[in-house]
Each structure stands twice: as structure tokens, then as C-alpha cells.
Image (tube, rainbow, N blue to C red; front, side, top):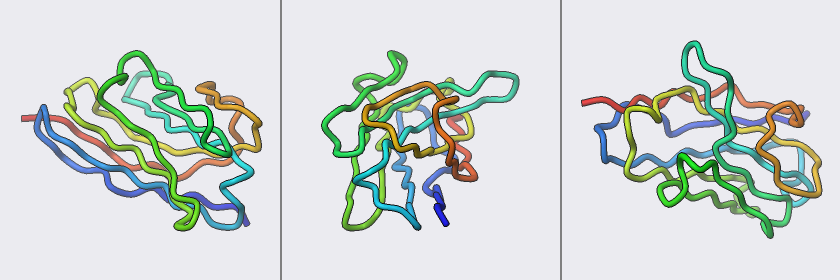
Length: 124
């Protein structure tokens, strides 16, 4: 059974950092693209970053470029999202998702497998 579990969210002041983790079980990360998405109340779910199955392709939303970094550790079955210089507008529930894509996509409708989400709140 394919499962994704996110962790690492919390409350942080503007300018602070958080590292989100997405632990995968029941499948091989080498065969799946992983995307990070976020959804704030009243907003549509938006793509934040994604990494292709073998890690050769990485994309970021313009709003997080230069501040967020996605990485994966296949040995630990984990994908990370390092978030630096956080802003109040980064506040949202963050989700990781997986799909057997041969590329990296920020389109949430392409992903079939989702974690439960972790709340990130940026506030002073």
C-alpha cells in the first residue's frame, strides 16, 4: 500500500526556516515523481516544487524560487522541502504527492497519491 506521511510543519516567524519531510512507504521513490503542494484557506491548491523520479529534474514555483529547496534521500525513502526566508503568504497546509511520472509536474491533478498534509504558519 502506497503511503505518504508529511511532517515538519509548525509556527515560525517571518524570515525563519522550516524543513518539511515526506516519508514514502509501499513504493520505490526511484519510480515516482514527488510534488510539494500547498493550500491556504479559500485558495486553490498550488504547486510549490517537484522532483522527478531520478532527481534529474526539479522545478519551483516563482513565488518560492531562491527560498525553497527540494531534495530526496532514496535510502531513507524521504523527500525534503527546505523552506528559508519564510513569509506570511507562505502560510498554508503543505502536501506531498506521488505519481509514476517520467518527469516533474506542478499540476496537482496529475498526482494520484497524497499525504495528509502538515500546517505551516508564518506569523509574528
